Length: 158
Image (cartoon, rainbow, N blue to C red; front, side):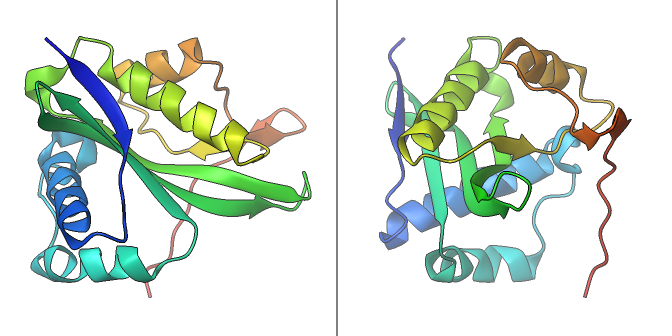
């Protein structure tokens, strides 16, 4: 079966809508919380993506059908004094898993980050996502931290 990974054109409304559908499918998966996007997010995400600077994304297609995506946000590392890549979402639909699509998406993100001269890729992974942790470790990712202390992700909804 033919697998293609291609950049998404986030200036195109149909591409943004596709990204919303793929993100919603990811949000329905247990590793994405299992509940799907809220009605608000489904309604407003496409416009928010179009308005946010520094976004780039890729879609994985199998026989022409979208089966996964990677959504990246250019950020900044003060310790590196350089822009970085936040791999915000990486997903493969359950029906297409086990074929190396996640690895190919991750490698595509890395190639793009290098092309953009970004200093590193950062990502979040759930502690119970053994498959994701194995993939990321095999691709050279390590826990973030300083002085031997791992960072913990914290948030405060506003």
